[in-house]
Image (cartoon, rainbow, N blue to C red; front, side, top):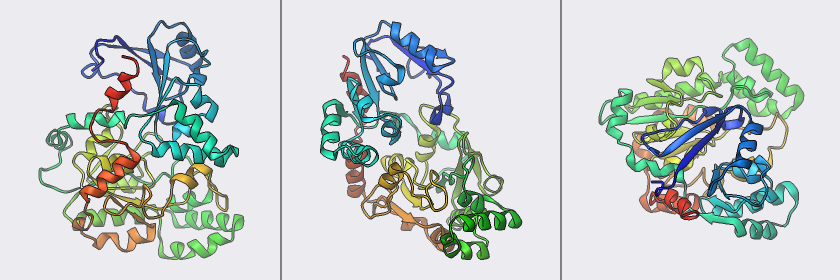
Length: 385
């Protein structure tokens, strides 16, 4: 796997964002790798400045660690749209190689940097193209080593039983009236949150009054997903994250609830290997789901990064799109639904109605992931060997 090169995996324990996963080393997968842990970004950066290495691979840029241009070959690996959000255009161009999934992300990155900084889109594209290499999605290479029957045994899922994988809506730890109004199960608290939202933006009244009157909230939404699974004799699996704890109604209603139990392969990828349908809310799992051949249902929700009445940030406007042919509304691969659609229509829908079209799936993969040949990791290694 490593072509005989000695490998060390360095982990920063005070990292923020999605690195809360505290990635652990898997000796069975990287027998030649050794791991080191650092308590701060400063300590990690200081060690990197002294390292005698042929190459450094990171989800971040060279500038993140304040490393000089000279030194080991620095290769930044794409991790969703966060690659563009967490670094500016110049930082991305200060890497030796920027590994992207596909050419789509060159276009997307150029549009994003134009939106946030005013740089000409063609100029941004040209700068990114100088450093970018499209390799595919390395984290998905492991899929071919996942045995669905082993996964079913691990989680106690009967053979030949349909599976609905539910990645619940992000509500926890987010300020703002919309999530508070939607999350509350207590009627008085829900009314209070609703009135607070109306005071800040009176359009909230017109849009959500009927939700309040009908008792629509996260519990009601979860009940609809449960009804869909139940009516199709399917197992409902609720997959949560440390930063998005399981709500009590999902614990009550799901047949199985799981947090991240594995980093590589990821728990999500394991569960997708046995799923028939994956329901999510603008999750990057839309891409993983398509790769795994699992039909996706994307449920619309307001931007969690914008409060009531505020304009969503550029990365949400450019990524969380509902137009047909975009990542979250790609007929033959996934469907785009509203929360009212899910509550009113999904329970009486058959799983068989969500059919993955093989040719369309390949087009989706070619567009957003570049390839499905399982060789992305090898192409990354080609850059140093």
